[in-house]
Image (spheres, rainbow, N blue to C red):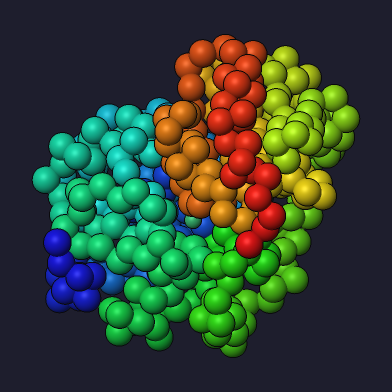
Length: 339
Ligand code: 5GP
Ligand code: MN
């Protein structure tokens, strides 16, 4: 494995390059891809951003959005061919190939040189070049570092800077999580100097909700929230019928789990969503309780210490019962006062 700086001479000639975010891409995953795309297309490369699946409408303002290929939406053969014949594949905001569903096998099989830029714990060793830092607030922060390492910070346009800003803003919970270092603020200051208007990005991401999304939020908080004081835990679930009733779209449930965590005294919050063929879940914690370990031990998942997720293929009711049955084993940890 080589440090990413060794890539510089490799990118000096025209290359065929794929850039891939994790499944259900969020602002960090997609913003990182499109910022990198904005840099790479300034060279004489052939570049395609390939998302495993659809992403929310509130990310579609990002420059380059119209050129993103969505694997699950068809044109699969074209995408497969591109990956087979690519020179480089950049994997952004994930570090295990199971996070990109079926694309994982194609990436593993491709002869392309793989480049990993990520901040998630639990990295697999599949990339020839890495820029990997679990202390980074966001992959987008690493994309900004990457431009410096390539000696290419002068290629940073306002459009690219907006994508990076969006990634850092969302992954730090609008600059409130413990990952919000002084370096994050310095990076943000640089992005503002390049021309980003913070108020505009906050509005584009957070204040473009559909009426259905807000109604579903109200319904879930009222009808689908359970607080288990004994375990300082609160969880919510959303059934398939609930999703249909509110015509839920990708992204409509993002951030919901934080409402459960915001209840006073709550240390562990969970959100379970029935996605017909599987149940996906989000976990959040405050303090020392590691939801990353919790998700990987019981829910085929992983993530960060205080934000993780997973996936199971048993019915929603059984997943919820299983979750409740685990809590007594963690009672002591969940009762400890905050650090
Ligand atoms: P979210 O709850 O926002 O979907 O995910 C929070 C975090 O959990 C993500 O940033 C990611 O690190 C992690 N995560 C979510 N789903 C999975 C999963 O299925 N597998 C793994 N390894 N991590 C996940
Ligand atoms: Mn991220």
